[in-house]
Length: 318
Image 1 (cartoon, one colour):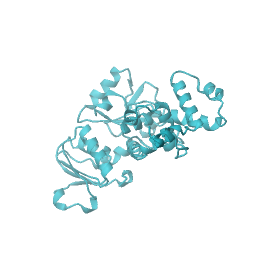
Image 2 (tube, rainbow, N blue to C red):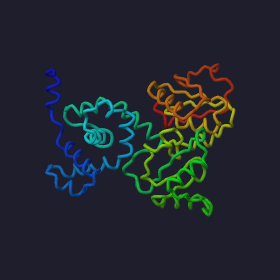
Image 3 (tube, helix red, strand yellow):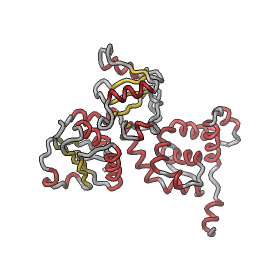
Image 4 (tube, rainbow, N blue to C red):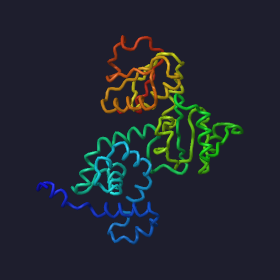
């Protein structure tokens, strides 16, 4: 081992991170959070508690960040619980990491890919804001109708033991909002407006669900679905999506078009363009023509006969 490597490995991880990682591991194994916190001898109990609770609150998005960044696959010697604590601190806590230890340097080296994955996830399923009441904000999933029919998705979930709540008897949108705010942990309901959008209780996790992994389900917040639903391009038409990455609206447009016609998807940022292409491939889209360039510099010859244009720059990092 070189002298530099010896120095890196000799630098200790800050105690609060090590203590938090051990507590998280014990909690996931059935331990009492309160007892574990107050049995710990760390001098900053308040800070330790806040970091552990924040990590538990962000569990679902942490799993996605870890999965898509492949940090634990590439860093095989890393402590998975410590990695979770460090990512939480970097992205959701103090926004910086203390010390210069090997685990800290490892997580910092993945900062760009972690941040991009987080931005894409926020566009899909809404911002992960801990100040919001997480108990009443539902989880939305869009059925990819190019792979799975809505009625088959409903049956699939019912076969899993979910109870389907009918829209019949719900008189107006206010009544609908009241109903979704009180979903039981085993209930789900179709959206009031967008038939392919299903609503589940807030804490429902889909990152490891079979239908999500095979592209049949897309984790997409209702706000992200509205622009494509309002545009409603007809099958066989020619559509231009000017701010396409990471691809949620693009794939929704393709489904509305029944994968026919031509859908021009434009993105100028290289990293986001790659994410766009990945989404298109994963979700079985064949009607797209992707353009890695600035939408304002498109050549009319490359997008002939456009009938519908979607410009939704608020969700685009470009």
